[in-house]
Image (cartoon, rainbow, N blue to C red; front, side):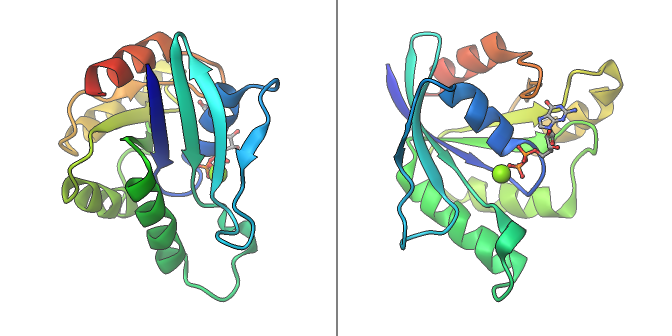
Length: 163
Ligand code: GDP
Ligand code: MG
């Protein structure tokens, strides 16, 4: 199955870490859209037998003129319209923040399937954050550690079920 996956969420939850893990080193960037967006990245990747086109959003490090919120809005809107499926990532250790809720509200008002991921779940003390994420209303969150590669089988199952 081929799937275009948009990875969205507030800064620092681990979106790019997951993007890089799914892309792997052997796969080149296919389109970084220079001049169109400064910081949305596209690449081919895979998870099991899923052929993924991945869209990574944000990268606010060099933003000076636009507000964080408008920049994020623009990135997220573009990813939502491009993706077949939205991967909405939160941080299981920090729990759900007001900014996460803003993302959730937006994602509820669009028709594409959303898979909720609670990243940074490698430590068992992150259980509270997973529970809060569940309350966002996108079903049972997939507990993941993008950095350590844990939960990837659960992510695979969730993507296949949602697609
Ligand atoms: P982004 O802003 O959402 O793209 O987040 P990044 O991928 O840049 O990651 C932000 C920070 O979180 C970095 O310091 C990562 O090393 C860290 N990080 C990413 N995934 C994990 C994870 O699964 N566990 C932990 N503990 N840290 C992570
Ligand atoms: Mg990033």
